[in-house]
Image 1 (cartoon, rainbow, N blue to C red):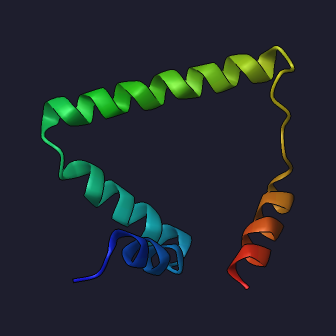
Image 2 (image 1 turned 45 degrees about the horizontal axis):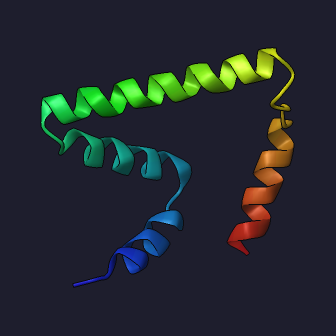
Amino acid sequence: MQTKNELLAEALNLPPTERAELIEELLSSFDSSERERIDDLWSEECERRIDAYDRSELPATPLQSVFDKINAWKK
């Protein structure tokens, strides 16, 4: 059986859409009350980040820059 780190390394090599599908399947494996709590936590985090951005406390990063960093990291 693979370790968590081995699984993570393998998952990070998947194309973005497959990683997103994997995330969705993993999240759906939680029971509904756990899933609702996870969704609530992510919603709260998103709101905090949006609010921080609106207050100019969190800078925006151009999408191409993000892709460039991801591609450099994968090499």
